[in-house]
Image 1 (tube, rainbow, N blue to C red):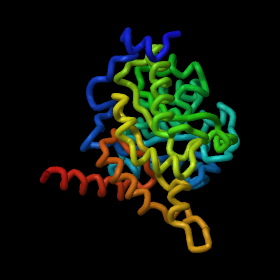
Image 2: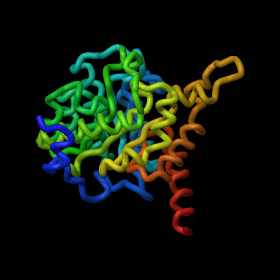
Image 3: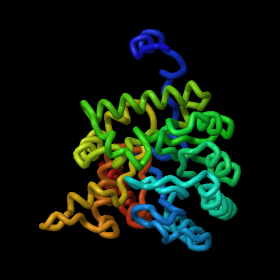
Image 4: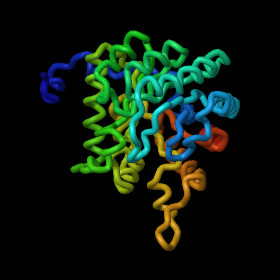
Amino acid sequence: MQSSRDRAAHPSHRDVAPSGSGPLGGGPGHPVVMGVLNVTPDSFSDGGRYLHFEDALAHGRLMYEQGATIVDVGGESTRPGADRVDADTEVARVVPVIAALAADGVPTSIDTTRAAVAAAALKAGATVVNDVSGGLADPGMARVVADAGAAWVLMHWRGHSRNMAELATYHDVVADVRTELRERVDAALDGGVSADALIVDPGIGFAKTAEHNWRLSAHLDALRSLGYPVLFGASRKSYLGLLLADADGTPRPVDDRDAATLATTVLAVVSGVWGVRVHDVKSTVDAIRVCQATEAYR
């Protein structure tokens, strides 16, 4: 295996930056808005709200009408400490919703770490695989993505939800996350996935402390320097609840973190991310329009 020094001296296909702004458009000035649709009983924010097919379908349609570029459908919670479900359960939750949304003309992505689930979702009409493990959880994911010609979000990840808090140790979180994302990009390219299909995500809240999250948020430019579109997802996460905690230290409730989330969205958009993943689509779209209108007068 080549070292990073060898690759620098002898450029390969892995060193070729993607062309264009990324799948679905997106990029500086025109970010993609990915609406979160958790078809689960236990997701940290909306677990149980959209577990039933009709509820999930209605919410997916609503987010699209509110301006979501794509609806991200997930059938397994990735909140800290969550237990895993089997692949058949995951497929049964997401495929009918994706198929129905696709039939309505709503673009969808599948939020999964399993190649079999991704394959079923792509067959049902999804066009993007949002893989929180960045390909580490299932070595078959690259082949599924490459064969389908789908886009692939590679998130920074160090382990499943049950034990990821134990893995939040870094020498320099920005440099370490950048290096580890570069490794995932290299592996994806070596697996036959097109450079133009790849998007990277710093994995806010995954194997990271609040301080790690803030540092990454403040240095998204370091991740953009990889040459790939960056997806940013901080929506309603616990570090925002900690920031807004009551005087007695009680974190702000999940459902009361949307204003803070909106601030992270504006900062990320100004920094030039490809897209943002959010629960509150309507406010996000409004805020982005304000950013765009302001930028038009610079």
